[in-house]
Amino acid sequence: MTSSTHTSPSGAPSTSTRVLDALAGIIAELAGERALETSLAASLESLRSALGAEEAAIWLLSAAGMVRAWGSGPEQVGGDAVRSIIADERWDSDGVVAARISGGEQRSGALVVRVTRALEPEERTLVSAVANILAPELAHAEKSRRLEVEVEVRTAEIDRERRFTDKIIDSLPVGLYVIDREFRIQAWNRKRETGMQGVSREEALGRTIFEILHRQPSDMLRREFDDVFATGRIQEYQMESLATGELRTYRISKIPMRLGDSGVTHVITIGEDVTDWKEAQTRFAHAEKLAAIGQLAAGVMHEINNPLATIAAIAESLQFKVDDAAKAGAVFSPDVHEYLHIIDNEVSRCKQIVDGLLDFSRPKLPLRERVDLNEVVQRTMLLLKHHVRFKRLTVNTELASDIPRVPKASAEQLVQVLMALLLNAMDAMVDRRGAVTIRTIRGPTAGEGVIAEVSDQGSGIPRSELTKIFEPFYTTKDAGKGTGLGLSICYGIVQDHGGRLEVDSVVGQGSTFRVFLPSVDL
Ligand SMILES: Nc1ncnc2c1ncn2[C@@H]1O[C@H](COP(=O)(O)OP(=O)(O)O)[C@@H](O)[C@H]1O
Ligand SMILES: [Mg+2]
Image 1 (tube, rainbow, N blue to C red):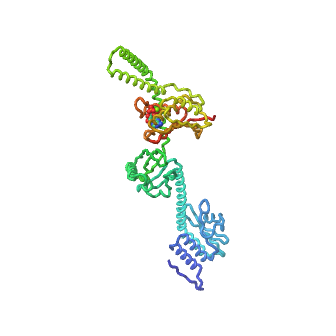
Image 2 (tube, rainbow, N blue to C red; image 1 turned 120 degrees about the vertical axis):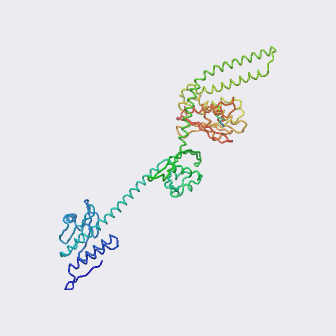
Image 3 (cartoon, rainbow, N blue to C red; image 1 turned 120 degrees about the horizontal axis):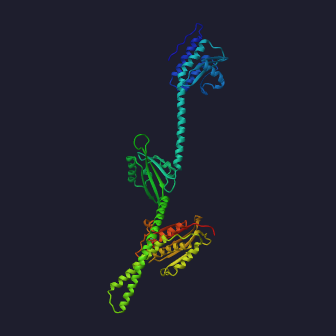
């Protein structure tokens, strides 16, 4: 934009010329490509020098008050003055000339010039004209400013929300991570950072899941994720892991996530340690089974016992008859003797099973003694001392001194438990050297205040069988030698006492059975 200079006859520019020049200058400033803030400042500067004013300033106001100011601060002109400027469009008082700027939405402003002399009418017109020119610029400045503020506020809000959701997923007691379509990790929670195989968030974010979970076969992982991406359905499965040093069971859920309206964009994977839950579940199922057997046993026991007694009695009297006849010179085929012998053996095997089952059906003994576990051990040892096979075995007893008592217990039933454990230990040590050790230990808490431990150096139990051995009728022993009821009866008794039965075993090295029982102090 160009400006022309009109010169008055005296040689000095006339007021109107100066005013026009100033206006042209200000318009040029605003049209320049400088940032709005800079052009506003420059325009105010031109106006100030054109009028020989002390200062020129712009205020922008909302109903609530001052919003922004360019030039000097609002303290120069009181709020009342600004309000009347806005109401009256123009305002003149001692040394102040002001014009209203009709601002943007719900905003108005004022252009205020502090002057040292009275202004010419043209100069006043200049102030109004500049105020009009500035109006759209100001509205624009205000709008972009508002956008800026809004972006800032939204960003802060999103940050806050993000921190909040981060906190939530970090507080979850499950491992959680999220991958996108490229299998890149987009979220990785606290639980996944801890533990033996923990990976820090910085390390994980942005990398592919195959790089991070390199221990897992990548084609299998990929197939699992592809499944979720393709079907959009939650996939769940259980996984066993020795990562923490002990065998733990995890429930893994892969959950589809959709960012837009289209297909699955991410997959959330949650890994939950369900070892304890699973154990409780097994215990529960087991307790139910025991109860069912108890009922069944009570029903049939009596039915079976009577015929068994009859068979035994008849077999015995047949034996007598055969013996008598033989003495009288009769000759029998050897089969007869063998058959009688078989009947006798099989009847006693049935009796053994029936007796075992009776333990389930017998009405439960009231548990009302306060029992010293060391005494229980001593009584058990006394009973077993005369057992032929025990005589060939080294049995060490290590009793803790000052051991607390077991409240609400039955010494007789606890003897039965230890007896069953010792008999099993003995069975496991056939043809093996070594010793059986029975120990009492003070437990860590009142809930598990005393522990009785039976260790052997026998055959051990394979890991896959460890949960089965407590099942009724599970036995690896030859028919007639084992009923498979010993441990399930122990289990039931210990549970009735509010305790817990546990086993550790290494094949080829031996097993340790531990009975945890609640305690009260001596
Ligand atoms: N100390 C042990 N060492 C090795 N295996 C054992 C031990 N105790 C129990 N078992 C296994 O658990 C099974 C079940 O034991 P139990 O319930 O007492 O029945 P049973 O002794 O009649 O077989 C046994 O047959 C055996 O396989
Ligand atoms: Mg047994």
